[in-house]
Length: 80
Image 1 (cartoon, helix red, strand yellow):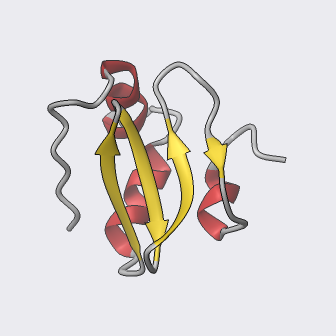
Image 2: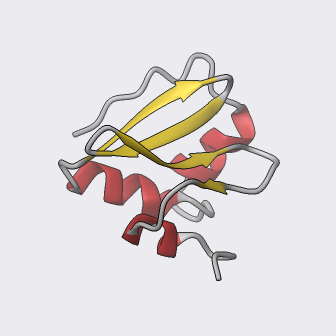
Image 3: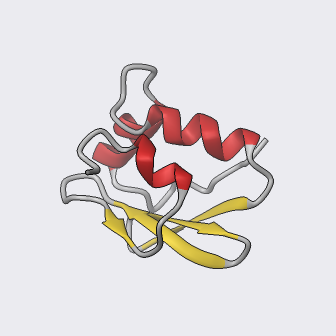
């Protein structure tokens, strides 16, 4: 199970990530079950990595930033 220090995480992002009906909750569940994925909180945002390479950055109020094509990116509702 992945443990994050949410002290500096944006409260909007916390709700989207950890609430069961949150927009990013399924990403949180995927992070728990995929050993290749890691995440760290930086600048109030969640930076997600696969095998050490940045894949995605989630913020509370702004749109997700996709850095690499990855299956986890397909879990974002607006991702085309």
